[in-house]
Image (cartoon, rainbow, N blue to C red; front, side, top):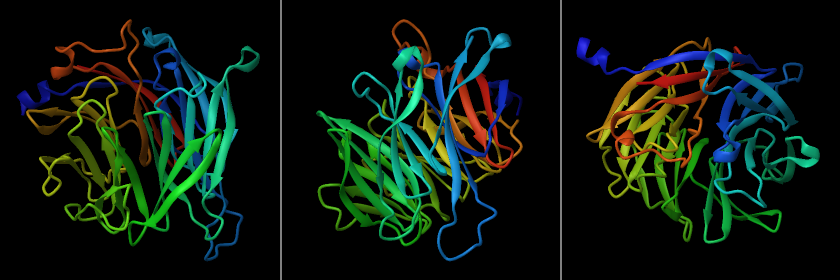
Amino acid sequence: MDAAKENLYSAKFILAEKMEFNADSVEWCPFQEFSQYMTCGTYQLDEDETPSDDIQTRNGSITLYSFTNAFDNANAKLEKIDIAQSGGVLDLKWCPQLINGEPVLGAACSNGKIILLRMSSNSSRIHLQELINLNLSLEEKKMILSLDWSCQEGSITTIASDTKGNLNYVALRESELSLLESWNAHGFESWIVAFDYSHPNVVYSGGDDCRLKGWDLRNVSSATFINKSHSMGVTAISKSKLNEHLLVTGSYDENVFLWDVRSMKIPISEISLNGGIWRLKWHPQNPSFLLSASMHNGFHVLSIEDGALKEKAHYNKHESLAYGVDWRLQSNETGETTASDTERCVSSLVASCSFYDKLLHIWEVNN
């Protein structure tokens, strides 16, 4: 037991911010020159509305923050830069490449829209400006639950999941969003969908039907595989960008599974975190570490050691459901870690948010 404790890293609180609505998604901007910026998405059910069979109205917003004094955490400051009204936000993801020199944020919204916002510096002021949106809820009312990006060979596409069990494949072309393909992937909610960044025609999806599925976008008439290892709804999927073979999944069953995508029959490692898993995030520079937002049991820092998942830190200073979490890109001259750094070490800032207490936290992981 003592040896195990010696291996645990510290998770140190830095500051907190109260949001207007329930907080459920947080994303640091993934580019070195914009790494101080972060967005937090919120949503809240309109309690004055009469419940019906239709999806109730959800208010929400996306707030853009700037975090300063990152290397002097005693004087760290989180400054609200801008706020964009969007309807309820279920997921946020930055496009992995700049568009016309600017970061672009994708939002999955409760009104059935995918909204793209650019972080613009017009008039010497940074702000969020809606670039375009696509309403996927024209024929039947549904919420967009998650989205992901793929940027390959000059094409920019997104994949989005929704409450009707569908996956929606969308292309960004000349400032327009076009629906390329939509198909029913799961019997209930499609909670999560993610690209295989090494193979842009491959996506993975998870649903409330407890199924993890693979798809080839060139032919979506049937899944390339169906896995039933999770015993409850599959809510989190994250493909490593630094290791082409590794994928992690999470579920309401409280387990995180580590997979080798070359063989999706049995996970190569698993760990129980005593709370349903809502989000999993690989470290952007260190392929051995990831974060888990574990709903009723706070946030966890996990490492991969000899192919096995290990818990390295537990951050439990939130007072409500742990929903959103993300690493800040480390600031250095090269934006890279050394080979020795990637073995066992991580020292990073993390943003996390929790639902009913409407809290956004910044904290630090140290080994």
